[in-house]
Image (cartoon, rainbow, N blue to C red):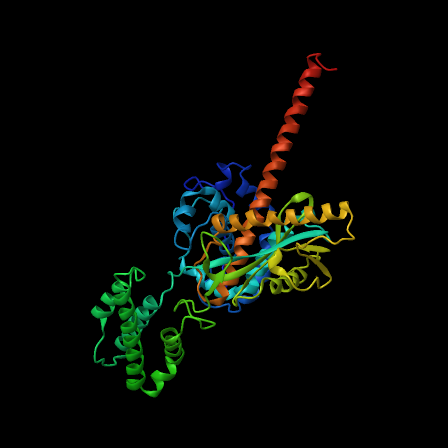
Length: 448
């Protein structure tokens, strides 16, 4: 059963109304008044089919809280504390009166994400683009694109760590299912993991190598023992887990499609050529930015489960723009990592290359300027990571890769709208002030 926010606007002497004491010029107040919250209610209402049972969390409240989470880099568990003490958070969420308690459990965020899925979050992102109105051109002449890595919240993977986790998982399964074990190896595996630390030191190399081999032996022993003692139903239930554990324990250094995390097996090892971080463990995210008069709006964003070639990320991003009703650009600038097709879906792909002998000085200068402008996407990706929760993906499952990327880009677009509104309000205030002073000068005889 779908929940609704209270529409009561009657004053209560014991409960202050938010509109009575907040600043109407605050950025969150202005943004809340500009967003058409009815759009989200119309789009997501079909997902709440039943008319029975307890009412759900209101859609307006849930969508607003998801936006605030990304805008201010907060988690599911940390948002409630900020929401209770910030009246502007409450106004943005559609509250009429000041509330002393967060209106729902943080676990409802997870339920809502599963209910609407990546397609629902794509609607939220598409709306954040449409909010910019005339700043989104009917057909952009020139846009920028690049990829970055959205890291997963996993520890740095080593063979010893993964084997130790497999041993612990097998022991946990045996305890839950009541399967008798010959030995748990709990104390020994813990010490063996310590022995692998600093394994490249000459005095510790042999000991670390021996400890790694022993951990692998124990992990394989625990897996085989479970398979041997499980009944048919248990084997069927845990078949995927046991296959994953086998792959993790027996994978070799130069294998392809390796497993780097047990709770997020889709994590990839991506090399971006950074001096300070040669390898990043997460998933690739593609971004397209554009906008009139230098306004950098994110027009498309997509997370990729596989470690795809950079040039192959362009077509899905352009397809997303078409799906969301955004006209494709004429030209798209990419770095040298996107070498391949010179034209995709009618869009010309610009890759830095040596100038042609037939190019005039003006043509060479134009090409050089376009490729220099492409670098403007780099700070955008930096802000998405540092300010809008793309640095680490804390959401579970493959769908979480796409959901977190979409909401990070949505937060960027909303922040740009807030800046635009504040700028307009400031200009309007200055204009009104100047007009008032001009009238006063005329009355006092100081006019021209």
